Image (cartoon, rainbow, N blue to C red; front, side, top):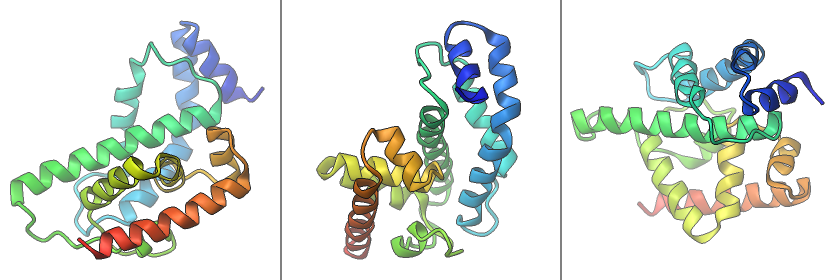
Length: 184
């Protein structure tokens, strides 16, 4: 059992000091994921990687009902929460400006992590919700890979499916999202 998994289970069992130890182990990987996400955001983004991780921590710290299974489960939940934070932040900004200066999302560039284009997080969230309504497993794969920064193997483990299935679902989801984004 990895140290992260042990600490997660201790935290689930009600040992608050395990949570504090856990933060020391997962902070750097979470900050790296946050940094990658924010690099793909529009220029002049007001949310910094440290602030994103801190907000994530605040939302996770009081999770008493979650029974953490392992490191992969933790990062899967963190991916969902990080997505919500980014979308909430973008919605607040967009409600202030009503779309002023928002760069349209090119889903190919957004999902191909190597691209450093700016994109609209709210548009991606809407497209992802539409995908989830039709293909829920593909949406989870995108969420874990894109927002959680998980590898194919880690995603397979988190979802309890094969790596080949994850790879196939990832390819199909990206194609579906590209089509969805170009028709909006």
